[in-house]
Length: 106
Image (cartoon, rainbow, N blue to C red; front, side, top):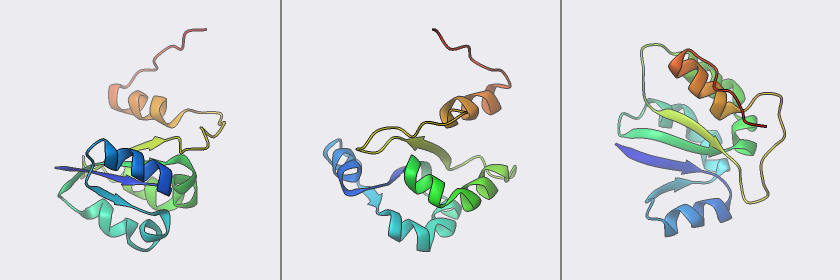
């Protein structure tokens, strides 16, 4: 299974330098995200938080599909830094996967 990175130019370039071969821009993702979420060759989609916010409805539907375990959708900060939110999407993913909340260290 492949890793797909969706994000801005700087983010995609960084992942390409790390060896990721499959990347796409947010504009391309807007047009084809539904297809990408159904592609069995994609195991993980790493999407920048800003593009995830723009595509929240499609991503939420995909996360609620109990019949599919993949792709795992991971939201990452882009080159400008993380978005401040009430709930951390990565912690929420872990909470749903494990069924438990992981305590934050202060």
